[in-house]
Image (cartoon, rainbow, N blue to C red; front, side, top):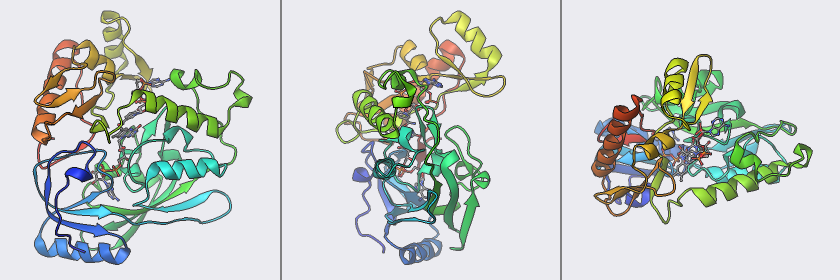
Length: 337
Ligand code: FAD
Ligand code: NAP
């Protein structure tokens, strides 16, 4: 139903001042159908919003925002196939599946946001990503309200990437995700910080222990958006050619470099930003977090323009110093990229 309250500042984790031209809360498939008809009639573009933890919202948004609140979760079989509605919160889902003895999602604990947004970014952390656990994604086409189902292959998942950022960008509203969990999947504990918090004997490590270790690590390292408004990592880790990575490593001892497919290497964006001298710097009420250079924090700046101005200055200095392009991770609406 169309909502009179169109302010979005409490609905994005960066707490940026923003107002939508129209806003509908989507509690049911009928709400979604109605809102899409209204958006078509008004000619406004549709902007599906979950918990707003991966967006940068401009002050005035010429969009019809759909707040996805679709709830529900049910087993489709006894072998770990689970259908979860788009508006469910991600972290409680992970906690519940792990407590029930299902494996797969334990490394993805404490990632903010909704289930419906998780395939958009192919959320990932500590060496795991969502993609291998997606059986199907259910959505509705914005243009005509028709339902569509995408297999995992059709989602074209990549590193923090999917078809929902490309061919289906702004074309569908995800309504549910089918997840295939497992009882016996080997655990992924190769990230050094994670391995150090777990028992030395690999047989002694349980999915619950991995979940607990990830939660503890994240609580110790990442700013809580409720106290320090942020959108997580503001830049993606750049993936460059092997040659460029080797040249950079020779010039900058200590640069963390990781495998990223044949002939490709991933660089730690946080390290580049810190070396360029940005850690802890604040401009116009937007700061580079003093403990985590990849996270921009709103300390009263409150505007997308200020966040993007700081991001542009950071990207420019990393380009000048290392010759590496940084790409913004959150989706920017109404301004910027
Ligand atoms: P929103 O921010 O509301 O939306 C993000 C994008 O998805 C928008 O383009 C929106 O239009 C689209 N979208 C949302 N819902 C739907 C839908 N139902 N249908 C179609 N499109 C939709 N990400 C990681 O990958 N790994 C991490 O470890 C991680 N850690 C984070 C830590 C912090 C402190 C924060 C603030 C963010 C972190 N993130 C991380 C980013 C973020 O949590 C994820 O991208 C999350 O999936 C976003 O969910 P959301 O519901 O908040 O999406
Ligand atoms: P970290 O452990 O300090 O590591 C720094 C970077 O090095 C990470 O970005 C990670 O890449 C990479 N890395 C470390 N060990 C690696 C390994 N063994 N193999 C491949 N890459 C490795 O990172 P952090 O910032 O504290 O975050 C921990 C995890 O949570 C990371 O996976 C990160 O992606 C995730 N996270 C994501 C967000 C977000 O908003 N997207 C926010 C907070 C945390 P990857 O990022 O590719 O894993």
